[in-house]
Length: 212
Image 1 (cartoon, helix red, strand yellow):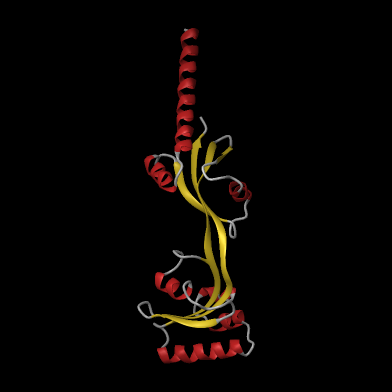
Image 2 (cartoon, rainbow, N blue to C red; image 1 turned 90 degrees about the horizontal axis):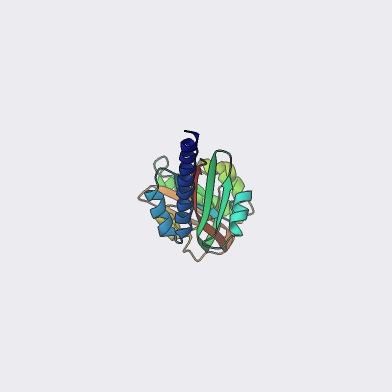
């Protein structure tokens, strides 16, 4: 009887080990972003997702360790309860720009009011007023609390009409200009605060499995 129990335990342990080894081997086989997305859909019972780390925005210990890895490499973190895999599936330098803005809602103000306000803002900025102070005073967006700072942005982050007029514009750093998005009734004064900067980004497959 004891011999049979021991054999059963050995079989169960071996099966679990093989299962875990097969799972990790499957993660190792993932090499591209598309394969990572397929892996997540295929293994819905696990907590899997593809996440983006940006070197300018993410400064955690895990992010710093992952940025040191090459594409296709992985890092494993284990606790008593779970095992988490981080697999780098894409690594690129992405062009970003940095800007601040003052927003006016065309549903709450007339175009005449908006244009007068924008002319006054541009005139005040050119006469020496700080843009962040103007944003705090005039902007109709919660972003006004941060002085209108939008941070680093790249294509795909914001409304396409906004990006087309801002990211592809010929304006230089410290230029102030206006843009309109009439379909949405959004109207802006924009300050370009930084020139184009290439920032390293990695796409990471993150999968967590319970420890058995």
